[in-house]
Length: 112
Length: 113
Image (tube, rainbow over all chains, first blue to last red):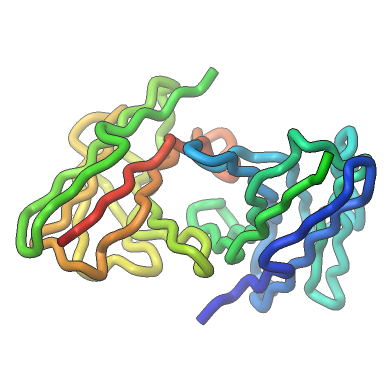
């Protein structure tokens, strides 16, 4: 049973466009929502994360929007670049951070 | 920089073999994790450890065991490998001061034939 649902599975965006990836969770006990970026042949790396008491967090071109009542959160990549082409995973962690549930992943391709 | 290394990038084993996957981290992290990554399923937690000799089951521990004899090293053991254990295995670590941020190794792609 997947507790974090991620969409879309794949995404193609023109250079300079906005990439949007959505996630929904079920367990209201989650208290940390990270996004990880994975390039081919590498392990995932933390990109940006948010706590449920905040509705938005921005770091450079990357923004997380969080809707606690809807149990949804999304990643927006502004001015998408070919170097952003990677697989993105949303995730949700329980209190303490030991158990993290990952979404299925979104493969992003940014066309030059 | 935190570095998490895994003993092999690619591994091919036969059904029924005992398989050891090794992970080493160099940042003195207390917590270590083993995940498997499968297309369409994301990453799933197999086991984690919050201290030497301590281990906790994750979401899919069946068919696996772990060992943590030293703080920097966390081993995943497949007692009798089966074809449904063909997967990418990822090791990660995090510090007790910030349990939430995990640092991942490059992964081991295991094929069981």
